[in-house]
Length: 492
Image (cartoon, rainbow, N blue to C red; front, side, top):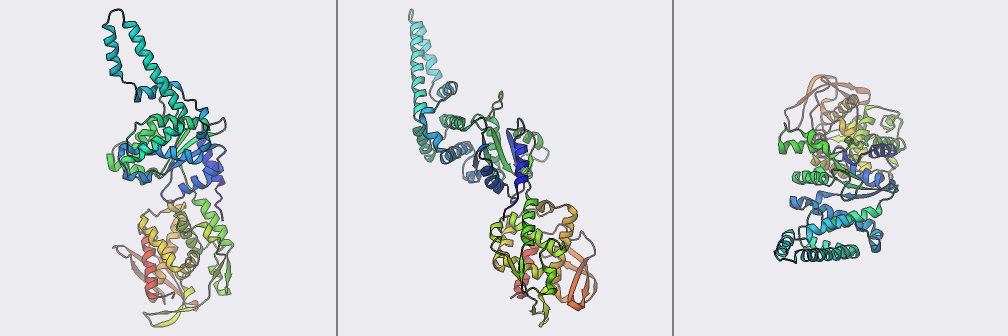
C-alpha cells in the first residue's frame, strides 16, 4: 500500500523550482513524515534532476559549537564518496580554480609577516632590492605552484588525510582544502539539467546553539555578490518545524526579539509548509474499504470499516489509525499483510457487577481496541504504541490530523463518548442526566447525559457542553483507558 504522494511531490517541486529559490526551509511538525517524504519520494524520484546530499545533524549533539561546520563538511564528503565515487576516481579531470587555490594558499601557507620582513631586509641593501624582491616573489610563486600541483593530483590523499585528522580531533578552518575538494566534486556532478542539493534534516532536534550555528554558517557560505553557495550547492534545504525553531529562539533571546526578521534571511521565497496527512488518510481509506470480515453477522454491519458509513466509529478509528501511521508506530507496509477482520458477537464478564450479561459490541471502544490489536498484531503491541506516542509529548490538535476544526470537533466528541461508555459502563444501563466524568490526573470534569437503548443493551453519551473535553491530553487519556480495560480484563 503506497501513499499517493505524486501531487504533494509536484507541489514541492513547484516551490523548489521557483526562480532564485536557492535557500528553502521545509517545515512540518515532528512525526508528520518530512524525512520519509524526502528520502522515499523526493530523492529517488527526482534523481535525474538533483544530486541530493541528505544529512542528519542530530548526532552532532555531543560536539562543541565550534566543530559543527567541520562535522557538516565531514558528512558532505562522506556522502559524496558513498554516492558519487566515480566523480572522485577521475583524478586527472580535477580543474581547481586558481583564484580559489590562491585563496587557500594564502590562508594555509603564506606567512604575510615573514614575507614583509624579507622584503624590508632586501630594500635596505643598495642595488639589490629589485632583484631580491623578484627572487622572493619567484620563491613564493614556486611554493604556490607546488601547492597547486599537490592539490590537483592528490585528491584521495587529501581526503584520506582529512578523515584521519578528523578522527584525531584536529580543528580545521571553515573553508579549507577539503571545502575546495567538495566544491570541485560538486562542480563535476552538476550538468545543464541536474543541480546539487544539500538537505539538512531534523534541525530542531539538536542543541539550540548548534541550530543557530548551522543557520548562520550556511548563510555565510552564500556569496554576497553572486548569491551562489561557496560549496557549489545550487539549493540548500533546511528541514525543521519552524514553530519549534521559533519557540527555541524566543526561549533563548526573549519573546520580544524579532524572530521573523532573523529567520527571513535563511530562505529565499517563503517557508514551505509540508503536510501529507491528507494523502495518508486517502491511502488508509482505500485500505479499510478493502478489508474483509470473518464470521460477521448482520447485527455487526455497523462495525464494518467502510468509508460509505461515514459514522462516528469509522471516523474515530480512521483518524487514530492515521495518527499511528504518521508517527511511525504502524507502517502502511505491515497493513498489507492483514486483509481480514474477525469479529464475533460475544459476552464478557464484568467483575464489578459479577455479571456475564455484557456484549462486547455494545461498546464501540472495545471493538476499536479489538480492531487495533489485530492491525498491530496484539493488544500489547497496540498499548505499547500508545505509550510511545505519549512519551513523545507532541501537541494533539486538528493540525496533527490535517482536519478542519468542524471534523476535529466531531472526532473529539465521538472519541470521548466511546471511552466514557466503557469506563462508566456500570452507570450506562438507563437514561441518566447531569453526570460528570473526572479526567484522571486533572481537576477537569466533563458533564454528560446518558441515553440508553435497552433492546440492544447499548447506551449513548451526550455531552452537555461540546467543548468540555478541549485541553485534555487525548493520548494520555487513551493510555489510561486502555489500562482500565486491561485491569478489568474486559477483553480477556
